[in-house]
Length: 230
Image 1 (tube, rainbow, N blue to C red):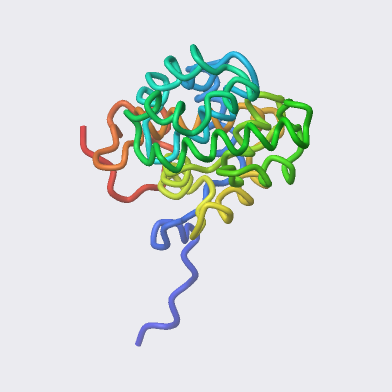
Image 2 (spheres, rainbow, N blue to C red):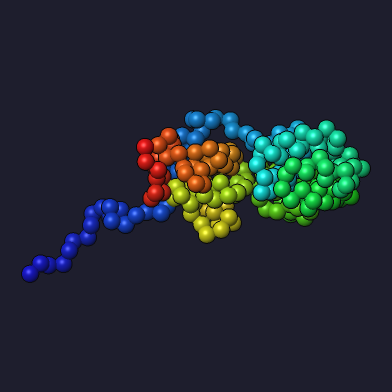
């Protein structure tokens, strides 16, 4: 009769991990940094106000589509003052090529008015003040704080949510859970650019329908079960 089975000295052979180890997280970001040392947003802007407007317009729209719309919009209204003067009816036709343009036009004009009324026309460097603006949620505030003001925030969109869960970098059941975990696990020296690296990786490599696993620099670190063959 066989005695009790000894503990498996390497339990990860039978129990699949869901979370990357700290040394693997370090390696993941080191590779992303090596491939793109100075990542930047693909939204085109010249001032914090223009960035704020572009991010508000980007909800459920591509950066390419937003840039096409803001090229026209910012030619006519590049400041809060000019946007309010243009009004909702003036903004609508300039951004009509993007989704939800009626609601977005109303938000852009309303947030411009609020910037004039409460912040002397300047975009505030404060999360609560940003999130009090019409059409601005936590993700938009994080993008502005990070990209316009250089704060080490991480804005979790659908791309980052997917990458964080697939790889085992920061699994979570919703975007806030993923954001909180990312802020805990991303090494401080990578935190400023983490948002850009992860969103670009999700947009061009770790794509929703068919991730490009064969050409992924993170393939050997990634814990995703259903890697595409190659």
